[in-house]
Image 1 (cartoon, rainbow, N blue to C red):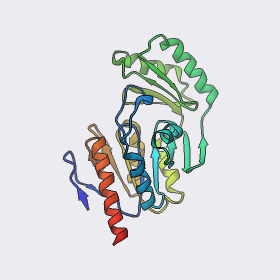
Image 2 (tube, one colour; image 1 turned 90 degrees about the horizontal axis):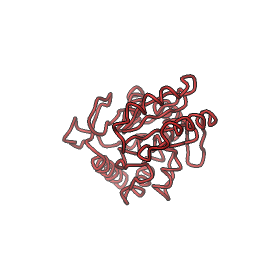
Image 3 (cartoon, rainbow, N blue to C red; image 1 turned 90 degrees about the vertical axis):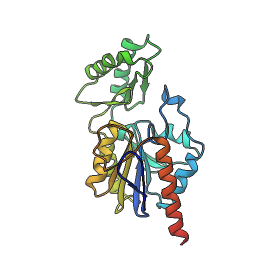
Length: 254
């Protein structure tokens, strides 16, 4: 079955043998001025839980947030996934592994606060294993923020990546593509059609990995992407997820 998106090629509904990887901000929920101000659709936790059930647990959240932050938003649901763009890996709920150097992150946070701490419009988000500098409320300082992060984050320890009104430093070699490939080698994700859905530049690694493994990616919104398919916005993602769930539930009942 397919569903017309109105923006790009028709997007296939999920088959039962899919392994689904979802970005969070900009994909499952709209952006807010700060990560703490994000509000999710009240139906999202139940939707994710139902999809995870029909996919035999092969649903993961791959996000720049810490997974604990996602857990709090979608409680009582807890899913597998990767946080901090892959620096945090949770193959199954309850088992989390981290990579990176918290002491180096703390030093980087101190330098950023010394430089930008007097501007309340800028948010320095200390994620313990990564750090993000948000300039959504001060877009005129974007270039300065990007330059400072690249200057202060040691290249031997960090990869510096741009996002939606944010610049981040994550542990070197950690990305959503690496996280997807790791999960794809584990049950219940192994041997399935790998499907990645995301909106940002940091999601391209996941999209490319899914497609190289024989699956497909879905880009949310406009902008260049390697994804085979595209959906226009967060509400369209929810519609696609609900349509996929209905199709899968119909197959099971049939």
